[in-house]
Length: 270
View (cartoon, rainbow, N blue to C red):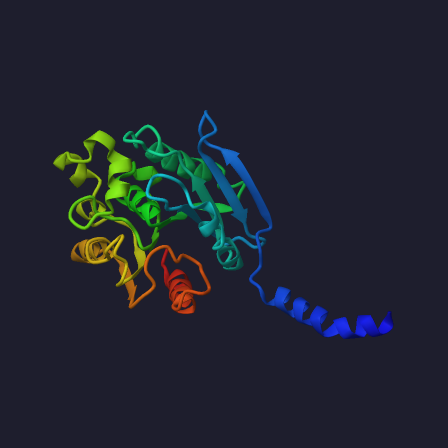
């Protein structure tokens, strides 16, 4: 018996070291409904030592589904930085985003603001994060939401930005439905067309070989629209990696992206 314990000791020590090397996990995690039908939920990951910052994340999925698991992988990193992290499971637009998806995004922001004291969040320091179609939702909030609900900053991963040339047609069609060919609606919901001088700072990540959401029409277009108006924006386009890599450690530029994001958050003046 003693020999067996001794043989296992190196493995036990290695496991202990691995656990202590990981970022601090959330002190508190819970999920609440934000729509009467229960179709939209907000999941919170609250850090042990909050610094007042918060991020409301919108998962991708082409406006057909929400990839909650991909976004949840970010929670330990943000919590280790003192940032409260919230993930919205929004209802699918099905051509009526104003009554579903957009309403859910605004309700989620409003709920965080209303519970700012309870959740140790500064209501003026709430940013948004969006991946893929969630990037479109994040930038729509940043450019077009009612002023009290607009975020303080934006974190965008391979975002869907335009509904015009170079758009992700699935996201556009699912979002607009029968209005998908209406030029006025296309312009209204093309985020690069809605940027103003008041649009909050953004950091944008993409890969040059992403053919599903081409960065030249999406990530780069949003960056150019922002910088033309004097808005603060940081763009990082890596040579390869396709679409949908989010927090995957196997992604070649994972460490670089995390380092860039962490440095940007540390330097952000809020």
